Length: 394
Image (cartoon, rainbow, N blue to C red; front, side, top):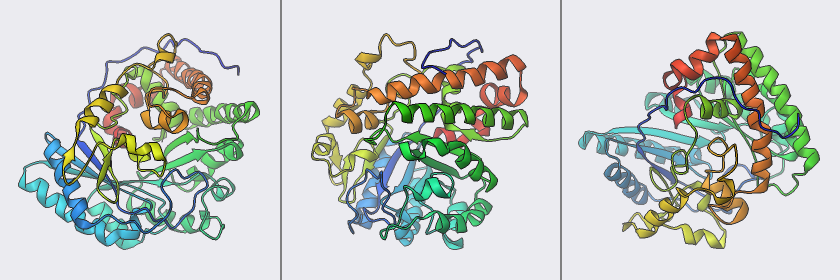
């Protein structure tokens, strides 16, 4: 398939209205039990967030959240400090109750440190987690390694049955790089065979080795995955596959607008271990220019730079204004833009090439299933999307 845009024929539904709580992402530690090759996080040191700092961040989220707040545990690897997660969860729930507000919890983890105690705690307190798994053993071990260089697949695979027993709706996130671009179908098939049904996949746009041949291999993989997607949805299977579903959603419900999907600094902030506040997770970084995106500290609250950066992120991307895909591609992500181009408003060329490749494939899927009046497809994207796939809005 050439890099071309195919006009869609399936009919847009009304925009979906979603209430967003105020989310505070707590970088509990900069330490991690893995050394993933593509990791953007700061150097792996024992910089840990104090309980006092975390509690101030939780109080801030509750103050800013009109009716609810969300605490997301992040790292490094947050499960290195499970006792702290337990303490902070109890505090957040008590504070929310005293203010008559709702409290939600999220966590990003590599999953290797899960045990029955931590999984039972997450289920009891409705802590929804995203687990990093880059596919089958070859794909995963090529990228997600321990400090000694050995792959981590077997360590996570040994926990998968237990993880899915406690939460069959767990989300699994995969990073695509040039070395793994041709393994996507085998990776998804492997993950499916283990019982995984919620897939979030995205290329590593910062990888220096992307070239024309790599993109062609990636396109071939996407076409293979399109066949897999069609097979499963025609069989009436319930699953979420972000690569295609998010693009279909951008047609079925409404186009994306800057600041509407990327809640950068507005309804989501990241708190570094030392208490400094940033608009999103990737700005908690060793990069010298990351300091330009600091928007406050939990001791004094957020400053005027927050308002400035939120307004800036909501500006149209100048290079995208006349593009037919504007509103459907991922140009809205200020973090991604900054990581790759140094500016939250400048979109990397690799992303443009990727979206021009991916969106037509997703549209072909949508067109085909719409023409069939496939009940699973219609239910998934037009009738009950939010209730059927609640994790997609976290």
